[in-house]
Amino acid sequence: MERLDSKTPYAMKAQGHLTISRAELNEAFRLLKKLCKPRPDEEAVLSYDGGCLHVELGGMTVTPGATGTWAGQVRIPGSYLMGLVKLPPAGDPLVVKVESGRLHFGSSSIGCASQDAWTRVIELPMNPTTAQILSLQFDFSPEEIEASGYAKVVRETEERVARKIAKAALELEGLHISAHAIREFVYAQLKSGYKDGFPPI
Picture 1 (cartoon, one colour):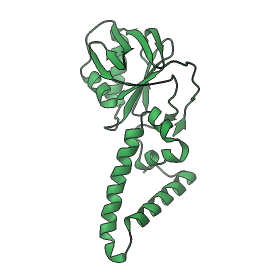
Picture 2: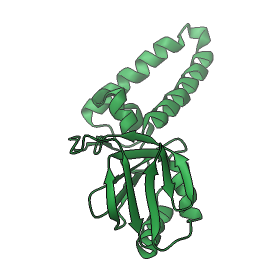
Picture 3: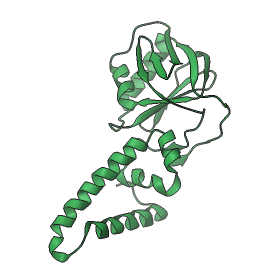
Picture 4: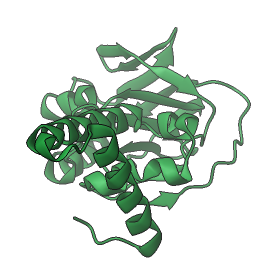
């Protein structure tokens, strides 16, 4: 896990209008289609550095060249972005804009969450383990986790682990070991392993 630069060079919320050539878009989408395997509830984070549109999802970033003006970051469902990857909208160049709380990607649009530029502070590896996801809480605040697009991923992972703990408690019911005790043990081991640099299991 990596903490990214969280400085905010803009004081504005996300807004903008960019144009991207079909060639640039095709290459970015080719990389996403080949390499990006986001979790179902992960969010993509989009921003602009003055020359490229940064699209971050699933532990990777693609940076198609773009021209225009843009301030701030937006978060959209990763599933929506991957849908665009499979069936790209028409247009050359393609217009990408943020307007009235929606991200418009060519003829397609979706509601987006807006935040100050470069708010994202977390970078998980591609295909993060359960331990890596749950360990985010040891270094980052809930606000930082949400701004980085991982809030739903963390919540889903916690719920999945809670179900496994409940099942284990049923198996150990005759030994009078509660789900609470198992959870305390699991998270103590997780925190200990995190400090010691646990292997990616």
